[in-house]
Structures are given as C-alpha cells and as structure tokens.
Image (cartoon, rainbow over all chains, first blue to last red; front, side, top):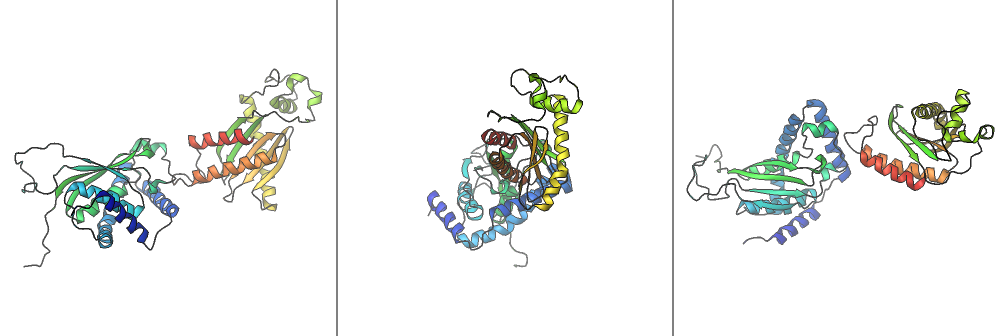
Length: 211
Length: 178
C-alpha cells in the first residue's frame, strides 16, 4: 500500500513531536560551527575539511538509520523515488524539524537493451543513476554563519556533514549513493541543494557464520 | 553634525569604525573657541585643528554650514581623540557597572561617549552636542547587531568585522537615532 506524501508528512510531524529529548537550536548551531572552525584550523585545506565532515556524517548516518527505522516503523521503499520522499518528509522532519522540498530526476541514460552492470544483475529495483535533489530553505546548522573570503574561495561546503549522514544511512539499507551539495546560500547561491544519486543497490550480505 | 563610531576589541584593537553624517540639525554648541574665530572656521574640524596647530588658517574650512567629512588630516585628529579617551573609559569602567557610560570625555567640541559590552568590547562614539537618549538607543542597536556577528563561528572577539550586512544595518540605525 503506497503511502502518500501527506501521510509521510504526518509521520514526520508525529515523530518530531514525539521525541522526548530535543536540543536547543542555538547550542546545536554554535557547536557545529565551532567544530567546522576547528577542523579548518587543524587541516588548513578546505577540500580535506569537506572530506572529514562527510566522513563524520557517514558515521552518524550508519547509527541514525537504526533510530529512524525503530521509531518510524516504515517498511522498505519500493523505488528510489519513494526513498527521496521518505528522506525529505520523514527523515529531515523528525531529526532537524525542517521540510526540504524534493525533486526527482531520472537516470541520465535509459536504454531498454540490457547493459552490462558492474554487479552483474539486471536493474530490477531502483534504477542506478536515479537521483533526487533536496532543496533546504532553512539550514539549522548554518544559523548565524557567514563564510570568510578564503573559505569561499577554498570551496568549503559548510553543512557537508549532511551529505555524509545521507550516504551512511542509505548504505545501511542496501543502497550505495553519492550525496553532494549542488549549491549553498552561504556561498552566495540562490538555494541550498543536496543531490543524492543512486550508484547501485547492494546485495544482502549473508552474515559470516551462517552455514 | 557628524559622528564617529569606533568598535574596539577587548584587547583594544579596532574592529570596526564608521563615520556618519547626521541629517538632523545640529544643536547649537557653545564652543569656547568659536567666538574668537572667524566665521569660516567654525566647522567641526577647523575649530579643533586651529586649537591644535595654533595656525590661523585652517586649510579644511568649508563654506556655509556644511561639515567637511573625512579629509586625511581630520581622521588623524579624530582617531587621536578616540585613543586618548580610552584611558578615561577604563577609569569609569572600574567604577561603574552599567554598560552605557555616558559622556566620559570632552575635547573642544567633541564629546566622547562609550558603551562597554559584557564581553569587554568597547563602542566609542565621538559626537558634538548632547543626544543621550538617541545615543543610548543607537548603542543598544549596535550591540544587538554586534552580538549577531559574534555568533558567527568564524568570528572571534578580535576579528575585524567585514560583514556588509552589519555595516548597512549600523548605518540605518545611525540614521534613525543620531
């Protein structure tokens, strides 16, 4: 039974309201800001800082997905489009209380003839290359932030931890994705957008020891 | 009537400064020297410069009542006055607990008012005439804007404020209150 967009929104709202422990938004933003500034001082290379933020996000994401699935009780998503809907309406809402809008995109080249896949299996599930774009109109991480000149030139994605969280969380549910920032208002762009692209669906790994 | 705002970090390094020319009519200031000087030199800077240099011809005289802004010579005078007032600021700081210290120093026609934030950042305003309420509101406004700037993680107590947003808002506030 396909869950409609409105139902997802409702689930997200309920999860947010039902959460017993919330943290002060200012404290959260200031802590994250201090973290980024410290990383910049330690690594002194903005590309490296981006990578580290993404790695940290990955670790957060692998743990976050457990909490999410336990609380939301949602089943498996039928296709990547639904993944986008759930992530934006339930995921972001329940953890950050923001509702990014999502736009979907088809895989770049669709051909009916079977193409040799790296996994060796025909794409029956979500088609590789499909992507969705999350447009965040407010970003609680970057509440008071103004990037200095060299951060702008160095190519810093301030909220790159979010990309890592998406990658980590989706990998735990058997989807290998690539998440990256497309634009950021901190950098002077019009919107803040994250594009999440499906690379491949991971096969279920049989736990070692089961004979 | 012009105003000069200096924002100093806790270690007395300049973080921000602004020169604002008020559109409000200047209240008549009884400058002790004014009566002795020819009318063409009663502009703000000329009076001070004449007193300092002792020369009778101030090269920066203006016509009518227009105030000449920011000539190279003038800036040095203004900054000298601001720096000199810092000692007075510290004196008053120790005695009083309030943030807004009213007029702490007077130099010819320039009065220096100060405002000290809880984090020891000093706002120094050079102005002519008396405008306590307006200046107090202006300081409170600048303080709020300053706090918002401080929340930026890339900004420390000693970083120079380069934000154009801050600049615009301070100017707006100056227009409103001064």
